[in-house]
Amino acid sequence: MTVEAITAAGGAAAAAEVLVPVALPRGDFRVLLGAGISGVDGALKSADQQVRMLAAGQEITPHDVMISMEEARMHLMLLSEVRNRVVEAYQELSRMQL
Image 1: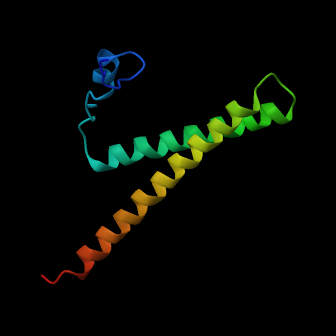
Image 2: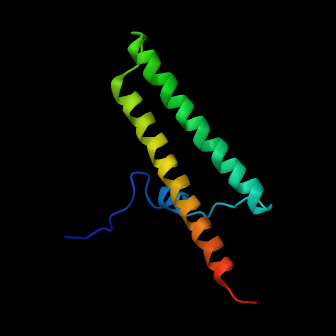
C-alpha cells in the first residue's frame, strides 16, 4: 500500500500556480490608496446592483447576490482596517518629540 501526498485538484502544477507571488504596482501610497478605495466602491456598487436586480425579479441567483455582498463587506472591512492603521501611524508620528 502506498501513501500519496494530498495535492490540489489540479495536482502539483495547480498548487504551484497558487503560490506565485503577485507583483504589486509601484507608486506612491496615495495612488495605491486611491486604487483600493475605487476597488471597494466598485465592489459595493456591484453588490447593490445585484440586490436591485434580485428585488426586481430578474434572472439572478440568490447565492450569487450573497457572494457579491460578502465580497463587498470584506473589501469594506479591509479598507476600514487600513484606515485605522494609518490613523494609528499618524498619531504615533504626532507624539514623537523632535
